Image (cartoon, rainbow, N blue to C red):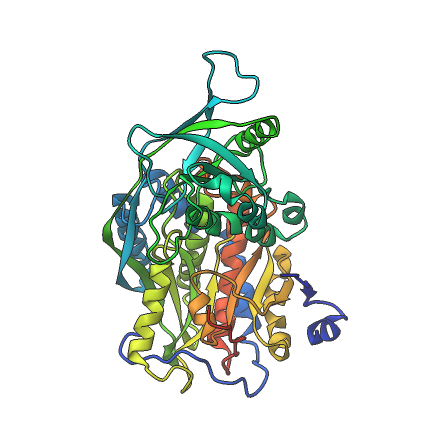
Length: 497
């Protein structure tokens, strides 16, 4: 989607802005209509929140403990369970009210994964070439000894259908490039969505045509011969085939060779899908003084892929959100409403945590859309460890002017941009946004986020402490502003998917 960045400071301000579970009571979801423009909480408090966040190393230290001490945190793994305990203990140590919300999560285990080109134009006798790849989440398996077949290279879904006769019994490689030019110009999410469509839907489409396996070019902006994993989605009742992501260099190699003649690959993938496992959302509340049963959610997801330690996806976002509670404790301030941290379960390969939270709200409140609404705002950080540039806001245009105090407080760190959007701003807050809750995210410099995204290089050394602090500051100021405003700011209700 196109971003229009609005600056909230200076003389052009007015013109620029034209364009769970609740403890102790049943929540409702959709917020009330904003009767009047939300007055700012004490501007001094917002300023102090920003200043305190930029001086605190708490989130950086906790992220180091999570990344280095536990490692990868794929749903269903022992590491994920250890992370739930570690994060919950850290929040209890701050004095927050902590609860673990149980959810059942997928339990997919990566097995052996290797491949080699066994025949191709110009191959000297007896020579093979190893290929760097990794299985996609929810991939099916080859036989233990592997499968050998020709690789059919396609660039669009239309080309896949046009070559259907060649696909049956063979491998399909979706050769679609990540557009780094978009990422360099503030459109990393757009680039990811464009290339990602072939990872999400390509293997299922290939399986329908009788493919033995599906391969995709890794989705990323840097060429380090690193395969990028990620989930793929199968149709209801469909038997998964083997599915893997190739490093960009190996996708290029196969494409060049295939232009000269048939290319044959041997592929060994042996993942397993085990019965669902126990997981949990980590919920920590910083109680409100006047409306403790109304909640502003500030969040990131706790799970990660299994290739690395998930420092940028999404350890940094989750710990930045947790850092909001530490800043509030440091200043000993409470807003009128409760600020609720959530470390979401299972964002990467199922979304069971956010759906479980939403379903629990629905059970307690059958008539969604009625009443004042206990979930009055939802913030999610899940775009990497870059510096915060400001706020992405899923609010009505008429509400945008109310956020000037947020920009004023964040001016010292240069996070004054405000981008009002109609779409969802995070996978985990998506269910809440679709019910009408105002959604938000820090606007993060994501130009190089997809260099390491879902790879073995997503490790703690990629985290810049000052950028992490800027995300804590942005979410601390924004969450307190929403929680202390006299009126609830309405969201832009999303269509059901």
